[in-house]
Image 1 (cartoon, rainbow, N blue to C red):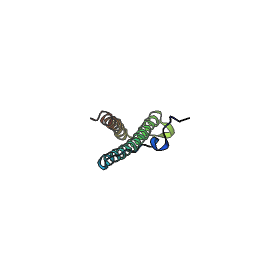
Image 2 (image 1 turned 60 degrees about the vertical axis):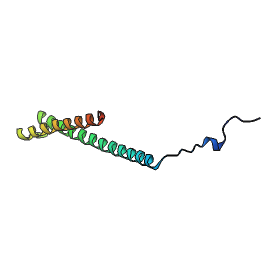
Image 3 (image 1 turned 45 degrees about the vertical axis):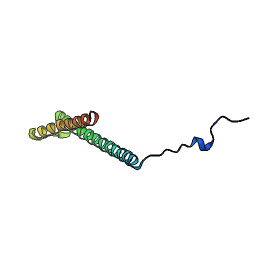
Image 4 (image 1 turned 90 degrees about the horizontal axis):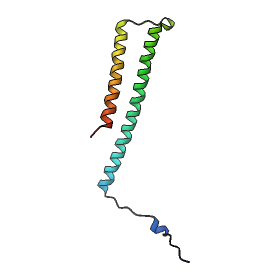
Length: 99
């Protein structure tokens, strides 16, 4: 009885790729991995900074444990929070909608 399944040698396909194509593919994969790491770090950093800003405003608003900051400092923190959100949105839109 002859088997119709391919032999081991037939199952292993040899793909010939030019050096230029291989280098281009490896470089692209490396760049994408680095970009993923950078974005993941920035999202964690922005998220923790945003949580810290919200916590400061909650402490100030409810005067928890005698927490009291000047109005100038609170304005600075509010401006920085808006900047954080704007930076995160700009990063996201630039990455997602990049041509």
